[in-house]
Length: 141
Image (cartoon, rainbow, N blue to C red):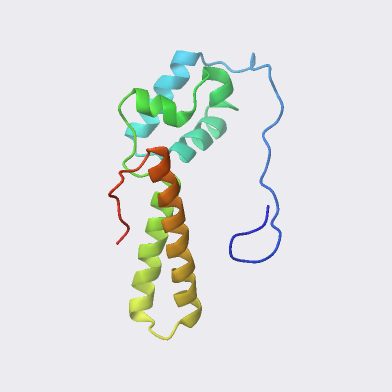
């Protein structure tokens, strides 16, 4: 797939191993779900929960073990986030860049980056509004 603003092809991401046998995992389905809830209460985001369970607890795939994704487990326990994680990361990056441009008025390269970032936020917000994951009246200001 091509990159959004760079006009060149990008490298694909890493692939998970095709391991279907998870008999080596020492945690049960319920234990993994409780670990997801515990890590969420410690202010870990969904992507970091997966990484933490993989690296610290040796759980290669939460979805294969429990049959549910991390976000589904969080929604069932009432711990869903107000903004989807990728949109929240883009908004945080936008705020950092806006603050940088207040101090560096002549930074034209980052002015363009801010415009591209704003369009990415708008496009992603439109998608989440269509999916019902974001309120119809949500606006990025």
